[in-house]
Length: 638
Image (cartoon, rainbow, N blue to C red; front, side, top):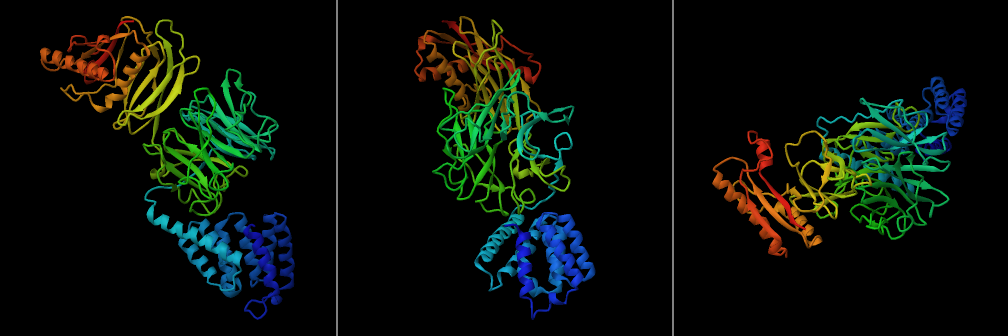
């Protein structure tokens, strides 16, 4: 029940039982009471502006009218005008603290709305000191006391420093008098998809594109998605090729709300497809989010077997194209309450979600959890005030830059109800900044696009971080979170794999990459540079970071048992030529020795060191020298 109606009930009770106290309603001017009753009628009909006019008239007639101040405070509380709400409660307390003491709870809640959590904690403590509270009131007070105590401690643990929370309304291109919410953006932050409640009841998808730094006028999404049914809670994949969303009461649905997929085509977005079981059930499935590589799907469901009401689950894409049996994310994320609105950042490591079961400010708060190297989730963190408030927060998405966030709110400058806002995330709550590489994989001979597997591997751990499949034309996009060194590989059976290195653990350029990759068919004299084979300076012992790439060569030879290869070592022109020949020979031999250790027959392997005799770049620059220091694989026989 909303505080305002609780206040009205308390006011009627106070009129009956106020005798003997300092404040006596029977001494209030009758004309003031008439105006006050008109205010109550208007307030109960939701006509708050008119109600304020009448209650102000009542106060003008009789400034002692304490009930009028309490009701005025309640109306401002409904309007979330916390300043005026608090001010009117304090006027009432000043008139008669004993008569008004039952209102210390809504007063505390509105103090918290202003971010004055210590004062809110003091006020609710005073409320709980009343020995005559009924059980529901005491439970409500104790709940708020826990929330405010948490808020006070959070402020101590997270000093604001120079951070300013300053949400900016995205303007008339995006927001209207209708409700706009649930934003979702592509990795380049140039396409925004959101839900709009058209005519107050029909949820449809709208899209806006960023051109020359400005967002275009949003329009209904192209294709066969929007309908007379409610489509909402959508997530556009990082590459902009898939849309997964919630459809409620669809004829083809298995439950009240199901998850649906649509793909981008030349004619617009395709008609929605229900993936069926086990992703959807007879229960409630909603708020889906795809991982950056589209191999994992996070969503919320109230299916049996969870920890509470709604839990967050993950399902994985199987080789046959179907989705696996969903797995509950576990008790670190899920509680006896409700968890929803999962969003996985482009770094594929940071999860944002809402919960009303974890300790927070009251209602649904926003939280984050970070994925550890073993795939488990680290401790959950509350995003703090003022992003979280005493009310219910909704979905949040963060752009690839790790700073720019989007969410829906009904702040003072709203165009009408919920609008979409953007703001900068507090630094300690930011995910890893994420760059990306995109391009086309094609047959080096025919120049036709090749469906291929594109992989991103953490060089330090050998962990496969992302694996995407190019489309039929060979187009791909894969994310590159800053902070690690990556091996980038492209594979297709019958072709030599492609190898590149992205050293992103430090000194990262603020740029993205377009790399078109011509794969060479496996045939005699075809060759590839192994960019993720590493040695220390003037040494020939393989570094551990080389293992991921070496195992790719092993797999290539296992898949093609007739193939014989030459491993060649090359250096730059620094130092004596004879020393460079010997170093490159030993490095090539080290690679061959590793391949033999993995069961590859020595008869299939050759090695040779060329020193600096075959440069592929200018040895007069450091960049050129780095390119010349390389290990190559060449097909000798097939």
